[in-house]
Image 1 (cartoon, rainbow, N blue to C red):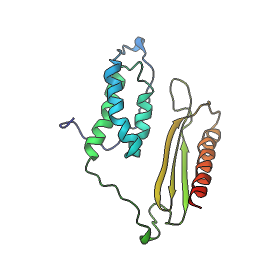
Image 2 (spheres, rainbow, N blue to C red):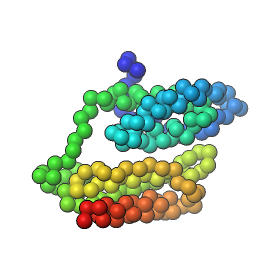
Image 3 (spheres, one colour):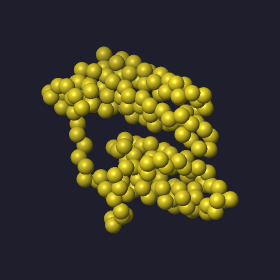
Image 4 (cartoon, rainbow, N blue to C red):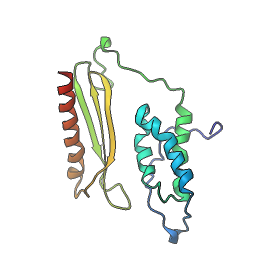
Length: 176
């Protein structure tokens, strides 16, 4: 991957993975090799690189029966990591006070929640995501496929909003 093509996003824009469709000529791929590739980025996604968490989770859904198309999509997060390995993480300095770009200050707890409606092609389930800033620092992030099939955008959005509310309350209790 040292000489790979560079890219600016962890996943191709608009990529919608699906199960293998033999009628479209898709070929199965070696699951062990695919699982090793998932494992190689999973550590970074969970520990230090929240920007690739969604891409990793989506691609991991097909780890038991990947296709050659999944393998091609797997290369994208690796290329992104290679392109951004020299980025420097910025920890918010509370002495600077308000950070207008993020819309929060060093005394607040904020949660941003979002969901797509039926983004999972195979099951029509939505994917939720939240990020929680506590005292000016990103402390919680999560992206997960919802357990139920949402019937409307409102229903899909309420699931991560409720989860975000629980996380805010937990963080407030922890801080106090």
